Amino acid sequence: MQPKIAIIGAGIAGLSAALACAKLGFQTDIYEQSASLTEVGAGLQLSPNATRLLDELGVLQHLGNQWYEPDALSLVSGKDMQTLCNIPIGPQARERWGAPYVVVHRADLLGALTEAVRREAICRLHLGKIIATTAQNELTQQLTAISGNAPDLIVAADGVWSRTRQMQQNASAATFSGSIAWRALLHHKDFPALEAPGNVTLFLGPDTHLVTYPLGQRGMMNAVAVTPGGAASRNWDNSGDSDILAGHFRHWNPRITSVLAATSWRCWPLFEVRKNAWQRASKTLLIGDAAHAMTPHAAQGAAMAIEDACTLAACLKRSNGEISPAIDAFVSLREPRINKIRKRGDFNKFAYQTRGPIRMARDLVLSLRSPGRLAADMDWIYKYRLDKP
Ligand SMILES: Cc1cc2nc3c(=O)[nH]c(=O)nc-3n(C[C@H](O)[C@H](O)[C@H](O)COP(=O)(O)OP(=O)(O)OC[C@H]3O[C@@H](n4cnc5c(N)ncnc54)[C@H](O)[C@@H]3O)c2cc1C
Image 1 (cartoon, rainbow, N blue to C red):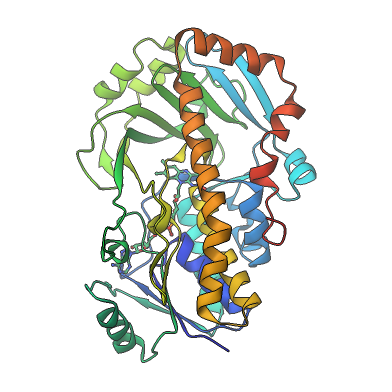
Image 2: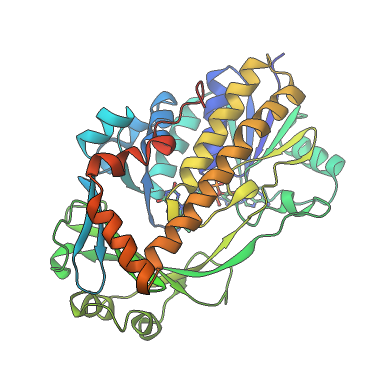
């Protein structure tokens, strides 16, 4: 069977799903509310489990020189600037996990995905189409009216605020995680405290942490701080009050606080969908943030969206295009993986932002572990393969 597939949302999940289905020869119609595919920008870390799949989709090479392979993941104390550990991820990532660990601007990744989708004649992109109805049959009608194609499968990849998810009875709601993400683009010459600007560096402190990594043009750094806060807005891009940010970092090392004060920040509240919401009806499947938006503490949100997309295509291939068995197989593969990744994110946040005796124990454990053992701890995330999950 050659199913016709409707995909709602042209984000990382939706575009990856369209490409993965096109590789099987399955036709997709992608419906996107925005009239043009521009993205509020931030950096993304793409670990080897994601870059391996992007390579198979033919997207990695189109990112060309827009990505950067950091040398190491470093954990540094935000108070005394002591390096707690370094996990090598440059050439070692390719060697250990079989694919590169890269950092890239979100807009560049979306651009490369869009270009790849546009090259596939069986992927049809419908921009400026807001898909919003209250019943399954109306949803199918709306999609068919736009494209002229009645879908056999509807894939809802419409993000954390998914309207498709909200149509579900007892739908899992997106809930505020209690944290705010603050983002700025810095020049690393303005951040002399950064000893290894080619690394992904996590500065750790009580209740708050800061992540920096190189991005885009030479010398620029993506900085994301995560602090406690309130959910004043659901927007991805709000202007941030530097005084509030400075308050969260007041006990940090002045080599960091001086940089924070001199920078202008954008911020957004971190919402998550903690109870996975895969299915609305036998014909509809949710993927990516629509199904399981998570906090960024395991740096796996985009990677999980890409894994979902490729797993769906693999399940459709195994079921010869039959929808129900493909959906069942998909959910049984993705449910445990997503739950385990979410737990790792929760654990990371606890470990990054802890204080007192637990902080001391954390620092001791990190300093005693070899880089090889720390890298081995990431194997289950980064070595993951769809054929050997
Ligand atoms: C601070 C921060 C840092 C992050 N860092 C990382 C990281 O390092 N690594 C990582 O892997 N992930 C990271 N993530 C997570 C990652 O960005 C997301 O998980 C990922 O982009 C999810 O993609 P998606 O396609 O599911 O959703 P989205 O990107 O939200 O796409 C949804 C699409 O659907 C469209 N849409 C919505 N509603 C409708 C509608 N009704 N009709 C039509 N179209 C609609 C939207 O316009 C959008 O284009 C981070 C997230 C944050 C907040």
